[in-house]
Length: 182
Image (tube, rainbow, N blue to C red):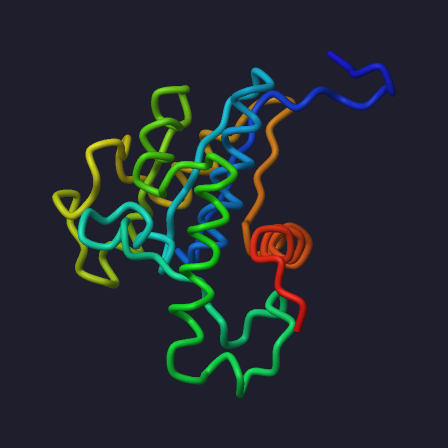
């Protein structure tokens, strides 16, 4: 099936989240939610530090990274000052609340209720000694990388590492949400 412009229709979005910073998690969840709202299947594969976004003890404590975050438009030395990360996180959470975007834990519940599948990476779990009991109830299961890619079979499936989208999407989201003019 093709769109009006002749390109193939997107049927499934497979997103890979490898960093659980607040800005990365929200951008990923917004893309997954947007896909579901358009009738497109979506799945998120949480790997490496992205696993923090689905851990019971950490899901409500994600933060905005101010050091090494090109979207912040501030020198690294300023981002590393005590309290900068907490200020940026508080500002982002406040903006999200004003935009009626739910907290991370609630957003994950909304995603799974809409049909988004949440998968944990087996290798990363083994590396960091994480068990399935550490995860929120909404996680659909644990997959190897090969299992995840096998789920991507079929025409119209797009697999995207969030790191690839980071510069484009994260810059726009952080700038818009924080409205910081440095």
